[in-house]
Length: 455
Ligand code: GDP
Image 1 (cartoon, protein in one colour):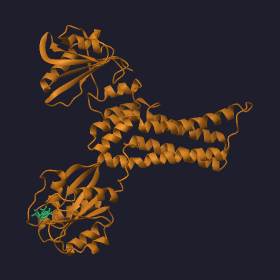
Image 2 (cartoon, protein in one colour):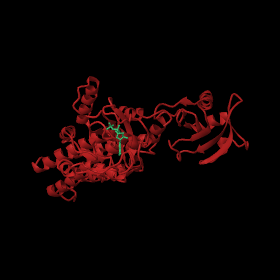
Image 3 (spheres, protein in one colour):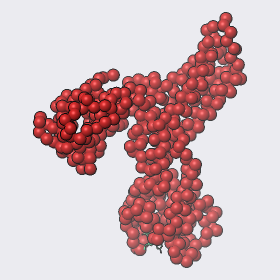
C-alpha cells in the first residue's frame, strides 16, 4: 500500500456554487495547512476530526479564494486515512489553482478511483460496496440509486458472506473429519451435506437472477415507439422526454431518422427511440427511415405500439402488429380526447396491455408506466433487495454455482469426500474474489480504473 498523500478535485469540473478538493494520506493535514490560513488563526493540525474552519487558500502567500477546510482524522474518513476537504467557490480556475497549490506543497495527483481504492485497501469498504459507489454516481432514477445505495450499505455483501460462511462451515467439517479420524467429530452425512449445498445453490441463483433487474434499473430498457405515420409517436416521445425533441407535424412521414432519448419515468429508465412511421411508401428517403424503424424493432426490449384511436385499424397497423409479436409490447390507443372508432377487440387478440392515452393532453402516462412494468415483468423489482450490478459480480457468482453443483453431483455419484472438499473450497475462493478478500492487483486496478479522478 503506497503511503503518498494524494489530492484531486472531487466535484465536476464546471462552474458551480462550490467545488471540493480532497486530500488524503499521512501528510494530508500538514500539506493542507501549508496552503490554508484560517480566519481564527487556528492551525489545521490542532483541529479534531469532523471539524471545519473558515479561511483562505493561498498560493505562495498570494490569496486564491475564501474557503472552508474540513478535517477528518484516520480511520474516521472516507479513505480511512487523514483527509482534508477544501470547499472553495466553484470556478474551474480557482479550483485548479487550489489543487496546484496543494501539488506545490507536496501532494501527488490522485489516480482514477484512488480515494475509493484506498478506502477498499484500508477495509472501509469491500469490493462489491466500492463498485456500488460508481453505480450511485451514475444512477439515473430513484430505484437505481436506492438499489446502489443498498449495495453500498452492504446488502449484497451480507448475503454473499452468509453463503460463504455456510460453505466454510461445511468445508471445515469435511477437513476436520478427514484430518482427525481419531477425534470425536460427527460423520459427514451425504444427504445433509447435499441438502445444505442445494440451499446455497438456490440462494446464489436468486442473486444471479437479480442481475437482469439490476441492469434494467441501471442501463434502462431499450424501447422503440412504433406505429404508422401520424398516430402521435413524436408527440408521445416529447411528452415522455419532457421537451420537444422530435418533429411534430400533421404531415405524414416527417420523422425520417431515429430520435433517441433516455427518460426516467417513476422507477424506470426507458431508452426511447422514436422511429419513422411504418407504412408502405414509394418515397425513397422515407423508405430508408421505414427500413431503419423495422430493424430497430428487432433489437428492442420493449415496444410502445401507437395507434390512432380516432380511426379504424389500417393495413399498415395490422402489419406493424405482426412485426411486434415476439417482443414485450404495450398498445397505446392515442388521441383518446377524440371519439373512439378503433376495434379494441381485435387488438386484445394481440396485446395484453392496451392503454388509452392522449399524448397531446398528457393523459394516461401513469397507466402507461404501470403497463410497461407489467409487460417487462419489472413490477416486482425490489430495490431494497441486493441486486448484482456488473458482469464481474455475475460471472463470479456463476462460477460459484458451477462448483456447488459439481460438489452436489460428486456426492450423488459417491466420489471421495476429498474431491467434494476441493470443489467447496473453490466455490469459497470465488466468493472471496467477489467481495475482494482474495483478489489480485490486476482485478483491483481494473475495478478502480472505471472510476473518475477525485472519487
Ligand atoms: P407521428 O407521425 O406518429 O410522430 O405523429 P405526430 O406526433 O407528429 O402527430 C401527428 C398529429 O397528431 C399532430 O397534428 C399531433 O398534434 C396530433 N396528435 C398527437 N397526439 C394527439 C392526441 O393525443 N390527440 C389529438 N387530438 N391529436 C394528437
